[in-house]
Image (cartoon, rainbow, N blue to C red):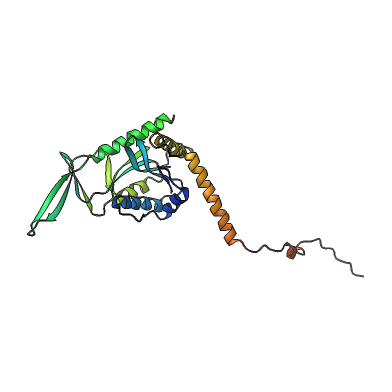
Length: 255
């Protein structure tokens, strides 16, 4: 899986993060998002391109966009612990804690509508594709939902959800099940990535097109290959040692 930052980035730094994406920072939400990307990278080949943090509309970014043969996956990462409940009055979180004196109490915190945010991201991606003259893809091609990345979260869906939700293992399983379902060609994948990056440039002029990214990726790989050959080349075989290998059989007749 190839990883592209939705913002201006250094190509070598980005490629290094693709192999070891766990950043040494204190942003635990980002670290768990890194873990999601790492898990995806372990099961996907280079037919898939992951675009991270691309602006899809004004003040709206998509955490993880995964584009590959099985479709376009929009994954909104949420780092929330505790019991996450979808009830009649929307989303809220229940956390148990001990009061002074030892009494066990549950605290309910109201959460933003995580489904609504994902739906806005999906609509923005569809607009970006249409603005670049791409065919308005049918909904089965655009997939995804909300990923709850905290290791200590539990989903309690008491009411129907309008966007698919689950933890990292759930989404890795879902995407893995779709790998044989090929709905996009290699050219369409690059067209989608280019449309997303070009759209992001409207909100961040430092973003580059997929063409530039591909050229840099090729240049980096070419330099890497040349260095690899130089490190592993063997001594050149002396061609003169083969001079007697194949020749005409010119025998001197017996007297």
